[in-house]
Length: 88
Image (cartoon, rainbow, N blue to C red; front, top):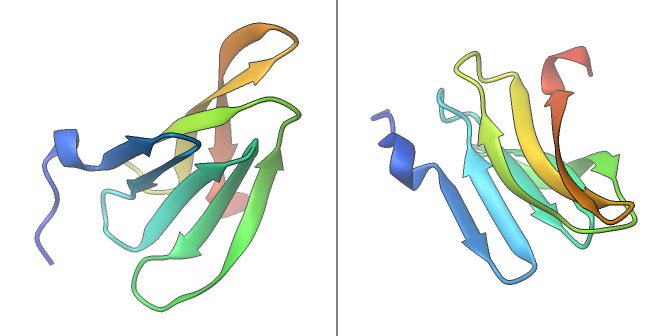
């Protein structure tokens, strides 16, 4: 597999965004306040990783292809959060 250039690893649209892990094995998706992970190769049912009352967006994978940084609107403020898919 050919690694995607950094600028093409995250796609943002109204209410939905996703990012491809650097190793190409997993997608992180955000929509309606939730963060999901799903296999990029086999597809299947997405695993809900985090839930927020507000918006979530822009999942960016760290180089280890395990952890994701994403933005979430909580309590009137945008903040960055980290989720480790390797712990599940």
